[in-house]
Length: 154
Image 1: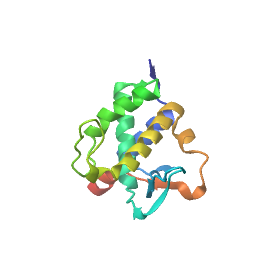
Image 2 (image 1 turned 60 degrees about the vertical axis):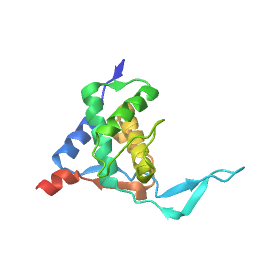
Image 3 (image 1 turned 135 degrees about the vertical axis):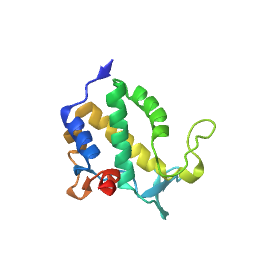
Image 4 (image 1 turned 180 degrees about the vertical axis):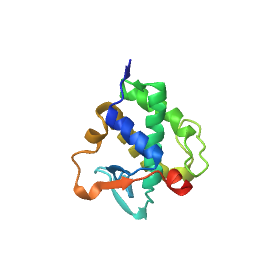
């Protein structure tokens, strides 16, 4: 059984594809976490990750468009399995190769934060609508994004 996509999600997708601004959240993490045996993971301040909000949100809308075409799975596990296939159809701007046993090559691991955050936002939007997916955060986390592919073409 597939879920129906809410109108505000379809509107956000339409606005994105038209190059119009879309209100959203800043997604992804700026630091890697490091494991500390016997304690909770801590922030590894020695590595600052580049966050590409345009790329992350382009992936969000890539997913939404594919799930609009192919249906939204009712179960999160099925959604994640579909994302494993869909992420390979997205232009990340770098060469992506899947390594044996799953996962990506080490040199593109920095994309994991963007990928995971984009998949999380897409899931929430597809399940609850765009407004509910982004509500309830600190004001400083809200941003407006536009599709750079459309903006650069005009």
